[in-house]
Image (cartoon, rainbow, N blue to C red):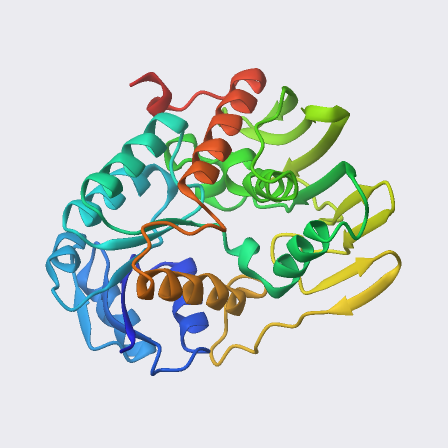
Length: 334
């Protein structure tokens, strides 16, 4: 039986996710419905992607009995209410990152998923790329010895994108871009909570963070540092340095297609899209979709690769970084 997907929101990321699904065997993955806040948008999306049903509200999608899992591609501030809508309707959920605006909201989403006994995963797509799978294998085998330092960065000029800069839309470099750097560090250090967090940053006029630099200290004197920015283009690479060598991601660390292990480079290409896509290497979302299918087939309620504990750790560290930098959203005051 194919895993039957519902797509919530007809925006750019939902388009790319649907294109990524079409790169997988139709016997395994089918999109059966899409919902948007305007019916015309859903209908246009459905036509473009040959989806049988289009809904003009998320509630209708939640009531559709033929859906196994919903992909939530709405903007950050709506993750909490949208995830709860679907979990309360007993639907499995794959929600775009960041899972919510803060750790309080993340806890509410996780509680709702557990209470309704449904699968829930934050769509940290990077962790499912073949290159990321290889990184975890190399680390487990001790290929670079004991890891002592991790560095990561993600900076792209997106100040013309409203959802990236407007506070009420959940804008800010940390939640939008920094989450990729942070999840990478947390993956390398096996979900360990840092002992120390030091963050500094600069603001946009809108009151959200534009560029943030974070230093993290872990047990056994292991360190990590990352930079994220919505104002400037950074090299966007990452490196893991151990006592016996290093693993580098030359560029696009959030959607990696090559690794340099102790000086030797290997390519891990992603499939070509059948339609134009909005974001780099978006067909790589196929890997997280397949993970969801495998988890559902096994009756699991969370993935070991991006567990509920992983999502909570990310949110808690993000909260502390924003506290130090001085970014406060309305959701933090409720």
